[in-house]
Image (cartoon, rainbow over all chains, first blue to last red; front, side, top):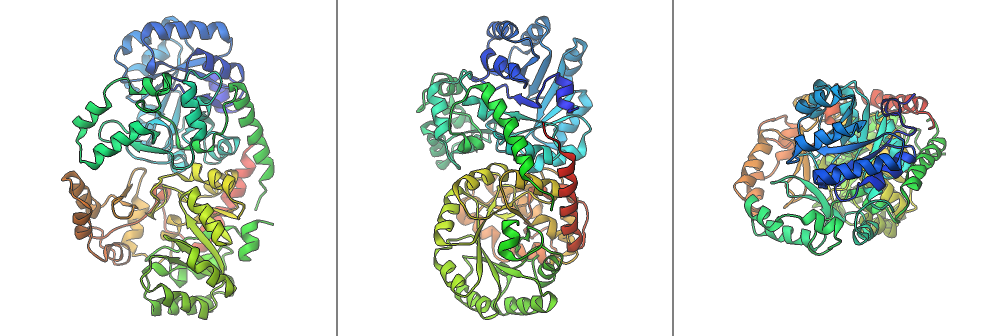
Amino acid sequence: MNKICELFEIKYPIVQAGMIWASGWRLAAAVSNAGGLGLIGAGSMYPDVLREHIQKCKKATVKPFGVNVPLFYPQLEEIMSIIIEEKVPIVSTSAGSPKLWTAILKENNIKVVQVVSSVKFALKSQEAGVDAIVAEGFEAGGHNGREETTTLTLIPMVKAAISLPLIAAGGIATGGAMLAGTALGADGVQVGSRFVASDEASSHPNFKNEVIKAVEGSTVLTLKEITPVRMLKNPFFQKIAALYENGADAEELKSTLGRGRAKKGMFEGDLEEGELEIGQIAGLINEVLPAAQIVQNLIEEYNHTLKRIKEI
Amino acid sequence: MNKICELFEIKYPIVQAGMIWASGWRLAAAVSNAGGLGLIGAGSMYPDVLREHIQKCKKATVKPFGVNVPLFYPQLEEIMSIIIEEKVPIVSTSAGSPKLWTAILKENNIKVVQVVSSVKFALKSQEAGVDAIVAEGFEAGGHNGREETTTLTLIPMVKAAISLPLIAAGGIATGGAMLAGTALGADGVQVGSRFVASDEASSHPNFKNEVIKAVEGSTVLTLKEITPVRMLKNPFFQKIAALYENGADAEELKSTLGRGRAKKGMFEGDLEEGELEIGQIAGLINEVLPAAQIVQNLIEEYNHTLKRIKEI
């Protein structure tokens, strides 16, 4: 049996990324009901909002689901307590060290999967006792690693270094790419951008439209001096680009960036002033679909592609 | 039959990249004799040296081989004349527009394949009449595109845009990655870094050793203000990094760079002062092998991986 399906007790080895301003209970429940693993994205939620989403998700699905927690979250203890109290079965941790929280979560019968962007961090996470690794490449949307290692090269290098179940992330929106991840040694995939353009994502319709309109080259990894993040090259990004051209330092960048840019763009739909985080593969996404349809397409394309390929 | 094998009249859809200071007649002939397509890298050769390599290659193999020509080459007309005179069957053009030369080469019964890093340039190349496209991702070594699109996302986007035979490049050093490229829609692969660490590559043994020692994160895409190039983070790169930290402009970068850095590093083996161009996948390459063994491994791993993967 597939290691990821076994670990999470799901039908298909497809994890829906816990993305800020996109991954609420509606999306997570829809993906879990469709046989994948839905994740609520805690990164954009106050603790009480997260609790509400968890409770609604439990009512909307009997299948396993999880919560993604960025480990730089300011009220980390509070949301971890909520997750434990609400008996969420799976936690995905990212953007920080899994050392402190993994043991606590596992004592509470919660499975832990850590998102990494390098072999070094995959090894550290394995040492910290996580149950599985998500290795995410340079092409992924949102926050990203400093090594800039792409999914195609990261997966086999992480695979060679660790023995844990491995989930490929970054650039995967089709069953063909899911098969590519499997060929590279992954046991499953995590899909982000494709689920932003889903009916159930809480992303603003304006943002979903921009994802659909994106083409090859529409995104860029920027703000490397602060935290590298991949976004669409919209007017807000052009402002950042102009600052770079004038030789701005990290402080100036931070002050232009201000606060709430991601919410403004992705949740409120301000395409001029907001930050629109999405992966390179947005260039291949052409329509908003129901989440269940996305899961079904991934599986059908995977099987179809596998049948098409012959031995040499 | 495989489109790439048919087009180039070769056994396996594997193209060996025509890399500067690595891809001389020995490597090209070895790959062609092993059933792939060997390419001589004209980018680091004076016209008379290129002619010598072509003539030696013709003596060393009866199989088809080709020459890679970077289109910014200063004596472009001279080397194109040599290629036509010597009846080289295949030319790979890169780093420039295929508009001018494609028709001339094709009038001389030469097949033309163009290396691109974006959908836009793939479309322009198709329009110019090339026979096939190599789409090369951000993870590739050496000169690289400004869009920073990775192989995993570039291949399906180019595939969706063009109808020509498509070769995936960047990050491919194993049969697993070759299968991944096929799953993404490519008809064949171009392999660079893996052939640098081959017995027949003219790269200096010091450089080959550095490729073997490289790990995940050892390379970086830099000098974007001049021409983006991926290289090892050796002492020469540290000098560039220090210039960036001091806010150097393109002129200062050019003057530190000087001339002949690539030759010094990759051909003369100066690991301190030379530029060492290689792809991210160097982190997965652990031994120098004969070129024929590399071709054989790619095919065996491809078939082995395909057998391992089951339908979902």
